[in-house]
View 1 (cartoon, helix red, strand yellow):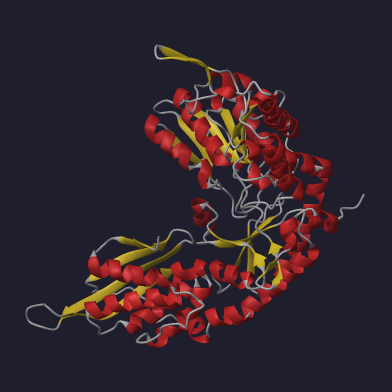
View 2 (view 1 turned 135 degrees about the horizontal axis):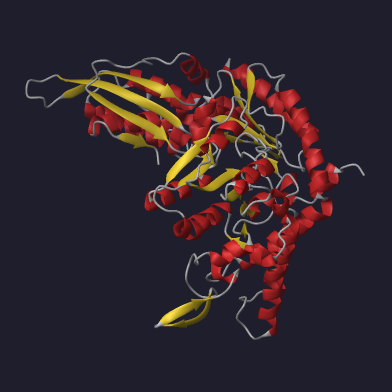
Length: 406
Length: 157
């Protein structure tokens, strides 16, 4: 069955809008994905017919809301291959998930002199929480180098792993370059040495099937808004024994078993990590997004996006003075580039004038930009709702930009 | 494209290609870094001031230069500014800052107030692009920081 992108596009209301008098060309899905109508409708329906607080009321409506919320946990677990739905903790986004792990597991396990290994290509969200933890615990951050094409230097990374290494945290897919890292090889290296692993899957889940068990990781985090769900819903996956061994994160309602001023006992996983009323409707919308992706099939999405990526790469290289940053063989459909004599912000503004939305800047990955020797890049991130025509439009807009600035 | 032409006027493109006073000022009396945290634009602003009266009550900006990397808007704005403020008193420069800021942040629906701004009037197109206001004002913030508090980093947010 061929991939009917025009039918897909009709599922996303925003793709029919005009921007600066032209049809919107949205090439910034890596920053945040657009939402299919089923997601938008599911939230309106939930608020219109099923809304109440969860885990509290004895009445029917609260039971319905709780069921809607908890069923998403089960569907997410299935979607990412987590054996047990209790291993899925709802958070706001990947950033919060990483902070949760740093604040709980990290505080408990990391001691003075211990080492945390990261990579040069991490998003700031997978750097700063560990720096803050290292500061508190007296631990050290070690950074695995990358190669000129934007791939991980595996030999260097392996050399960094020492008896003091407690954690290896890395992105499955680089948000800035699109590089796909060899996750299984990396988790195997860590496992042999008893090192805990955390994978930032924020840029992987929107593009390819994910199976956390097969990946062999201890923690896996991602954001719902990047997988076509609403903002405010994100996931921390953790292996059950690990989650059970961890202290709670935020204290409050819903995360307790019983509270007395003499002492409080905490609820079990996952409630232990979900204090207070969560973003219930966003979780429900997130569930609709997962179902939508599941119905299309992540394999088919990945295949289509790879075709689009090849086409876009080829066409972009026709633009005089354009250089792609990040050229590994294994890439998700994210293309970072620079244009001779034109700063990325000016590229961004010029493309905006043509109704094309791209990201320009350091992509919350300043150490990576420094390593690649550029202050910033322009980034076109492609999704399964983008078309070959849109790539052609991008290329001609870039050619006009090049002409104007030359 | 009309808005874009309005933004990227030939003067701006030309100053982007060949920025004026784009160098370190070895005998600068004042210096400040300017950074645009959102975009990563970075520049260092150098200024040399001198007193024209014996009691030091009247200080003029003798020379301004800059170095750094950034977009066309930030670079051209810095370049044009270095020429524009040359020979002016600190008070005049402060007034220029306010006028320029007003120009790029005023509502695009009202006529642009370009009185006394000379060549800087080319930045009126920035009003249509609120995301680029910080680029246009970065050098001005750095200049103000340099003249007021030596050694601090100016930020546009």
